[in-house]
Length: 465
Image (cartoon, rainbow, N blue to C red):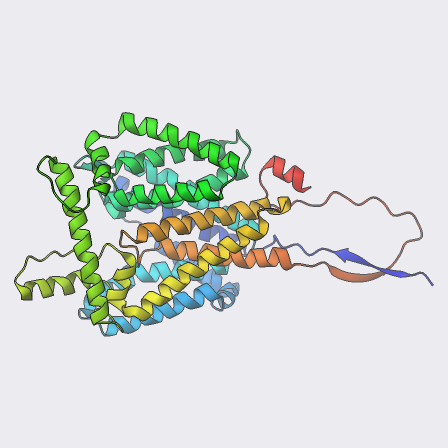
């Protein structure tokens, strides 16, 4: 009898049964994150509704391919589904139901669609890499729009129209995409056009962020740099120091002096001095208003702990109270995403929101720690690091802005969920055992192992092989 021996038949994990559907999703993701259709609408003067069409097509393909059924059972999607259910409940009990319905249909439903579609149509690490690339390249149209439709208010850069018409929102949107551009630079060879384009985009986006005069953006930059100093390797630290020096040199030469003075008011507190300029006084008054709105949102959250005053109704509810008290009506949002959710949808919604954010951070950090010392999984490590940093940027900016119902967090959470599933699949895939007879002739040498397609850098591919 000829002895039998197991021969491994590795099962490939980079394949996807719906490449066309994933391609449609990536186009939709790129147009939405980059505000590409806003740029087109500004140029042609018409809203083509292309993102809505792509969203519906992606939803249909997610249902037909069976990806949606698997995605709805994942932890992050379950948390967002619970949040959406509570959103509907608080809409019914809202103090102004019509305003809450508009917020639900205009902002939250497209945002919730992202958390459903991304895990449904991304099923491999190669597709996760392409999604990160789509986010990185979204900096291009956004930066182009800031040039074509540039506008300034008190020396602060912003767009003349659209969702980036506020300097703080513009700074937040640019900073959120920089980690993905860094991932592209790390994934490609040094002189690859993609890496060069991302380096230029990071420099331009950093200077543009400084020119917005957003103090929340400045705080976010400082927090990100501190994290990199403590967690990054020595090469990363030296590169970061050189890049920061270059950006500061460009900023000093290009950023208006009144914008630089605005950053100095971060340390001025809420007191107004006689020697302050008009712009400095405006900045301090903005800080006073934010502090007042934060206190009012906390008070309203404690007075309506279960269902809140209704999604998107904080400013109207506060204005009604101010009118009854005979004081000036502010008609401003809470300028804090966490207290905004708590005051408008109650503490249960806030807990779900924070739990989803912490879970996303936990999964990406866990993957980063598991793979950082494994040279064969360096691409996974870098992808996890980029997603982690993007989540940190969102968490910090959300403390100073109203991003509770926008698409940014659902997009990040959807990417984290898809990435987590693909990493588990990659790490847990074991070769199937096939029983066969050993040949009587000498065994030929084994071929070179196939390198996964998500490893794009030539040097890394050589090391992996």
